[in-house]
Length: 379
Image (cartoon, rainbow, N blue to C red):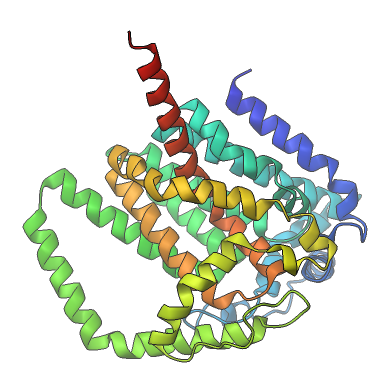
């Protein structure tokens, strides 16, 4: 059995061990949102089983730009078909979701292999496979495993088909973006931005159309100058509202500072990014949910430092995918750093993107060790 398959199977079995905890109060991630999703999904499933359609207003979730608030109804509706089957429907749903989380682990490994080597892939995938926050949240009815699966698979599709013609690529991308839309609608805009940047850079390099690219960039810049004020104003207002809504609970941080202008957000963003990826700090530990993930920020930091140089290897290997991945990572990091001011929320939300740090950091570390080994072997 190959390393990738062993990793997939091991991740699945490891998550399966935590399934009993997700059915009780012992798993901190199986409470609050997860229980609300299950309650709604059961109700929708029972309605479908009786031959009726659930009476929900799904369209209201998608019309506003950067919709504020949880898309409980949509996600619960996605889960509801599991309640059409006889038996423990909640267990079926949890097994399916933890399997998606295991596939996401394999995707991270495959991307490491694609951009560097099997060792880099394994080093990048290990935190996703073994960290408590991943292993405890994936066997629950939360959206984390699904959005992680959709994100990593989307990057794999672009990486595997870069410079090639694959007739199923548009359909695959559309399905995965649809999955992003029903799990966390706010992400659709940063994802489309990353795809646009990557596609534009890739097209420019392949066709050597640097003058055309310059003209497009100039036009886009003028468009931002002309219409950017209203867009930026809407974004600032939306993020400020999200910031206020999430400064609650015992694990809230930076609640005294609410950015109200673009300048304040720029100043706040880099601090917010540090908190987003590297909390909980030792003085923040006060609940079981934060205690079980205390070691994770230290490992994140250990990957983040080499990742600052490791991204260049990915861009060099595939300029379109690498540039899109870097651009998307920066945008979503800033977005979530401003809108996330609670340790519990940060630990869950960063699962969608922290694997990028693991990927870049692992590639740099493995490459440095390989160069050092080559120098030692040279007579």
